[in-house]
Amino acid sequence: MNNLKVVFNSPSEILDFVNTVEKYPYAMDLKKGRIIVDAKSVLGIMSIGLKNQIELKVYEENCDDLRKEISKFVAA
View (cartoon, rainbow, N blue to C red):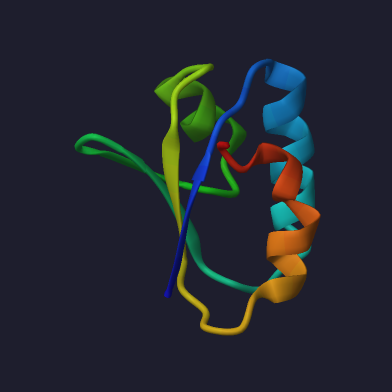
């Protein structure tokens, strides 16, 4: 499993993120506090809100290709 922190600053970033991660067969969740949503769900991510650091859990060991493609969303 791989964990990353991601941040979304606008609804268009959420749409871009979901369109990107939907291409991968990996199971992924986003977690903020006690809230856990499917990382491929636009509505789920929007329910967490914008400008929050959210933990992305990817249930796959080798996902370097995904990491590269979503690097613009990774929190600094």
